[in-house]
Length: 470
Image (cartoon, rainbow, N blue to C red; front, side):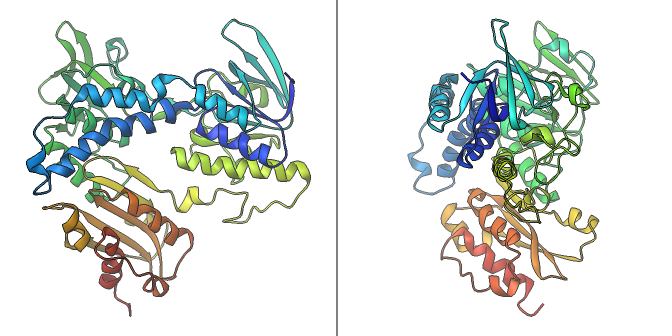
C-alpha cells in the first residue's frame, strides 16, 4: 500500500467518504483513515438508527388517527421488533458493505487513529500499536465529527449516563428514562422511548427546540405530553445512581429513572488529532473559509461537524462535495468558483440549512427564523397558516394539527425562511429549500401550482395570505 496520496481524509464517516469520493472523481488519489466503523456516526449511531426507532411509533399513531384504519389496530407497539429492525438497518454494526463501497470507488482505507504530525503528514496508529506515516501531495482533510457534551452537573459522570449512542444502540428498553436537554436528540429519543412504553421525563431548562420558531417547540411539547412525557423547565442540580436507579435532583421533586440520557449539545472531536503541530488548539472547533480550507494553512481543510458551521449530516456531505471538488481544482490549477453559490463554496451553510426533527408532530424548517432574520437587519414579513385547513391534511388524518410559517424579505420579495410543523411535513422542506436557494421571487412562485389534494397546497395558502399585490 502506498504511503503517499493526493488527499488524506481523517475520518471515514459520511462526510469523509464524500470528500474522498469527489477528490477521486476529480482525478486525484485519496485515502480514508478510520478508527471505528466506516460510515461513521450517522450510519450506525445517529441518523439511521434514531429514525428507525421513531418510525414504527409514528406509523402506528398515523393509522390510529384515521377512521377505518384505527379499527384494524388491535395491539401495542412491539418494542423488541423495533429494536430488531433498527439493528438490521445498521447491519448489526458491521461496516463490510461500506468498506466494499470505498474499495469500489477507488479510495484507499487505513484503519487506526490518525494524527497530524507536520505539513501534509499524518501518522496512523492501529489497534496493535503499529504506526504508519502517510503523506499528502495536495491536502489533508479533517472529518472527525463531534462528541456529546457532558454538562458540569455534580454526580452526573459517576451515574454512568447514556449518550445518544447508547440510546440508539440499546438492546433492551428501560422502564424509565430521564433526558437532560431540549434539542433534537432529546426530543427524538423522548418520542421513540415514550412510544415503547418507557416512562420519560425531559429536563429542558430553555424549552424544546429553542433554535426553531417558538410555535414549533410548543407544539412538539404538546405532542410529547400526549405520549405521557413529563417535561420540566429546569435542569438537574445533582445526579446520583442508587440501587433504585438514577436520581435527578432539581427545583421540583426528585426524579428516579432506570437510565439518564445526556443530550445537551456537542463538542468537536479534535482533542487528539495533532492540531498543535500546525498551530491550532486541540479540543476546539476548526475555523474554515467557505471553501472549507483553514485560513493560513493552504493544505488543511475541515468538513462536517468539526468546523461547527452546521452540525447536520446532509450539510457535512454538501461541504464535502465542495471541498473535494475545490481540492481537485486547485491541484490542477483550474479556476476556482468561490463566489457565493459557486461550485466550490458552502454558501448554504449561512442561509439555507434544512432540518427535520422526527418528533410527533414533525418539525421541518429551512433558512432563517423570523427572530434571526430581524436580528440580521432584514425587513421581514411573517406569514402563518394553519395546516389543518389544507385539503391534503384532511386526507392525512381525521384531526390534523399543524402550522406553517413563511418569512419574507420585503425588500427583495423573496422567502428567507420556512417552518412546517405537522404529521408527514418532512417531505415539504425540499421545495422550501429550493425557493430560498434559488431566491425565487414571490410573483414567480404563484405559477408553481401545487397538486390537489396534497399537503403541498400549503404553498398556495401561504402566498394567498401574503397577498399577490403586497
